[in-house]
Length: 361
Image (cartoon, rainbow, N blue to C red; front, top):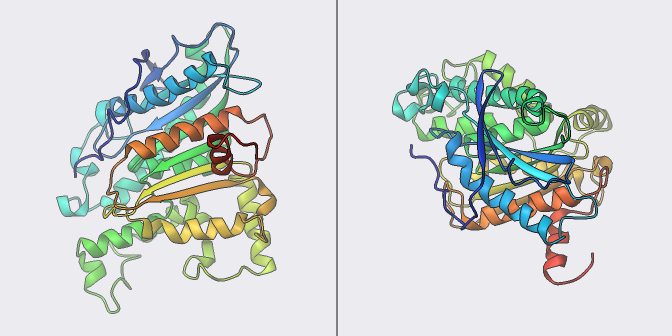
C-alpha cells in the first residue's frame, strides 16, 4: 500500500531541524533555531507518520504549522501570553531507521498473517515512545533550562492518526490531538479489513464474522489489549455493540471516571476522508457519535468535562491528507496555543469561524 499523499500541500518557509538520539531513538526536532530569544515557554507538536513512511515524511507538516505560528508571533497574533513552538518526529516502530522485518508493516492482502497483531502493537509502541521522549527530550534541547516545554500536542496521519488517539488518552501531558485519516476503533477497523480481505475467519462463518474475535487473525489476547488501550474498547466497553444505548446511572459513574482520567480538558480534531476505503469513516463514526453525545452541552453526561471534539469528514477525499486538512490543523494548533491555561472554551471551530467574520464570540 502506498503512503497517503501529503508533502508539499502548502508552500512553507524552510525550517531548521536537528537530529538527536534520545532514549535510543533518532529524533528530529524542527524549529529550534527560530524560537524567539525572549520566549521561555515552549509548546511541542509531536508528529506521527503514516504506515510505510518515516519521520522525514512529516517535515512538510512541521514547516507549515511551526511557520504559521512563528508568523503569528511576529505579527502579535499569538495571544496574550505567547509561547514558542517546536515540532518533533521520529520513526514509528519497525519503520525507517528502526525497521527489522518489512513484511510486518504490510496488511493481510500483502501476505502478513499477523497484520492485526503487528499494526496495533507497532502504533501502541509508538505512543509509548512518544511518552518516553516527552520526558527526556527537554533535557537535550534545553540543557541550560532557559526554556521549558509547557504543553504537548500530537498530530498523526493514517497509522500515526491511530497512535495519536492512544497518546491523547494515555499520556497526561497531551492537551490536544489531531487525528488525520486515523481511527479510534481498532476492532471495527480490523473487522472491516478482514471482510474486505476475505479472511476465512470472517467470510467462512455463519453469520459472517462471528468467529473473527478469538481466531488466529484476532486472538483473544489481542482483544484484551484493545479493551485496555483502544479508545472505543476502553471507553465504550459493555456498550460497544449498542452505541445508541443510553447509559444507566451506574454505567455513567463508570464512564465518567474513565473520561475524567483519560480525556478531561482535552481537545480533539478528527479529520477523515469521505471516500476513504482503507480507513473508512464508518469505522470511526460509532465512537465519534458516542463521544459527541457524552460531551454534548445540552444534556451530555460528561458535558462538564471540558472535552472539545471537532469532527470533519471531507466528501470525495480518499486515504490522503489534503490541503484543506492541513489548513484545519494549522488553525487548530494556533487556537490551542492561544488558550490561557485552564481555560475551557465553547469550541475551537466556532471561535475560528467568528474570527474569520471579524466578530467576537
